[in-house]
Image 1: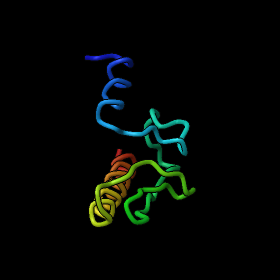
Image 2: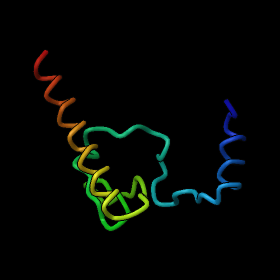
Image 3: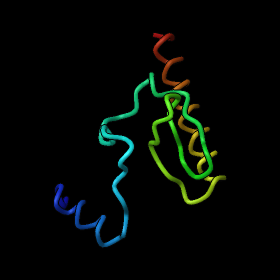
Image 4: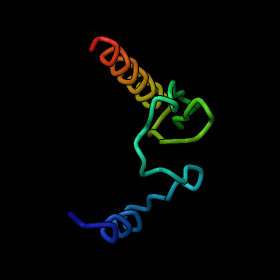
Length: 81
């Protein structure tokens, strides 16, 4: 809706920071990124690359759990075909 300029504007207005650690932050997660882990508020790939920051550690644990379950389910679906 806003295009890339609108996203940049939203980041400035909301005070959100760009993630300097992950250069491919716009690329989707792939199987080689899994399993992900929660480290405090951060969610990191198995290679230690931060992919997200949650509002609190409990939320990051839940997000990591759901992402891992979703990836596992997708792998199981591939084998079922």
